Image (cartoon, rainbow, N blue to C red; front, side, top):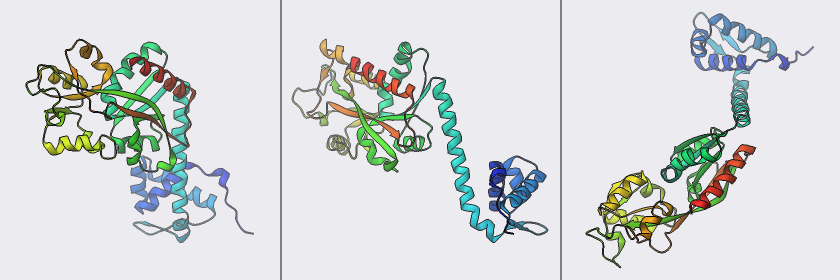
Length: 308
């Protein structure tokens, strides 16, 4: 009679131990890597061989060698462990969501403008909600989203051109950020009507790299080529301090300088077509937004509209 596999008795740890023995070809090395004793590894392999109904390793005095059947099931075992890890992360995310935590990934450029707003203003309106914000560049955010380490991303819309596995990601426009390019009226270089790309500038550290596929490309490339970028500073307030001293021109969210522009303390020299950029929400198709995440986005949209 043909022996059948007892799948209902398979323990995921047995699969993990099998993979490590397969890769190291050593029971002792596998035990050390897994943080268990060698007898535990040996017993686990024996149990797995019994459940599978096939020999997995040939043993000699020093090493163990994978059998032909082991080589055939190795990749499936890897997939099984990856699926188990993803399931565990999914369960943890569900638990955290139920506890009222929302994990947001945010682009560095956007974080410089709204990171403090999220962490300071938002809790005042939602004291029972735990907000976790992680900033990063586009490749880092891409990895966070694919690994389900964040519930969603907030990033400038054109960032999608840099994402891998875009077929697994949903991108929806969220809100428009108004931008003002400002200069002090007392700046020695300021002349009304003059080409502002000839002025000294302070920009964020990533503009030159991340503007490649945006409508801002021509403008910032002209700044880079002209050599008029004096500072690369991510912090908005630090750049504004340089502007107020008459040292540079910079671009910041309009709500940060609205009152100073009204009082004539700063002058808005924003070029046509560069007065805003689109922020979008990036989500994983296989990881639907929780109720708390949806509430967070709805509230965030209202709060940002109030700012603008």
